[in-house]
Image (cartoon, rainbow, N blue to C red; front, side, top):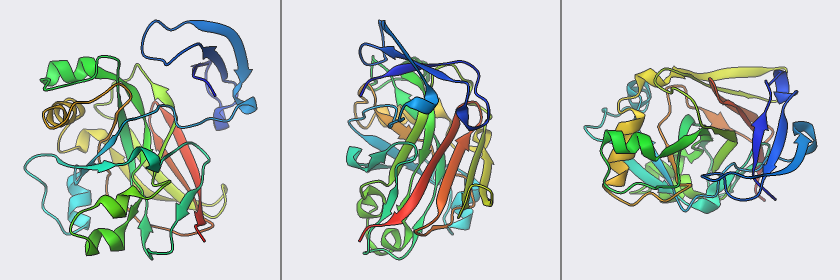
Length: 256
């Protein structure tokens, strides 16, 4: 298991890309080992190890409305444990305790080497290493029944991240898309939003969270989901894509 840098221009299915191996974590002083592989010959894992994943609720007005909630006056944050993180093509495992699991496709922010503690907007921007794609999988029935969201959002496999981290990207107005289907040829578009419609933008979120808790290198902030959340059942495949980053695809199975 190692980190690498994605090289080349992606064709459909990410063909045409290669991975250049680096000898340590990717935050600074990157040194290449000289090893390279075609992307078809490697297994992509979650692109970062996080001490914590911070989610943001109701950060798109249309999603707040579809859930029957008001738009919050300040960011509504929660924690997903690091054990909930999986990578591309790993299975989302639905536990028997829930009967209503839903997808939430999102832009994810990755914190860089400096971390962030009580930073302003400018400091927040400097603290960002890059961006990836996330899926804030949620047991909706448990979210409604429990007084807080830890169980509903914290099951193992409930935080797919990937396929990689994009370090040079203007995220002020990007398409966020989520599709679900039983096979790759018949995928239904469930969510289709744009990051410009966030209630609180990325620097505001990073700054806000950093005034609550210290953000460490590799920590991830999920920036909220647009309208269109819907059910996932065993046998489904869920695909989340963010313009300029790529596609995160995961099968759904039952945890027996």
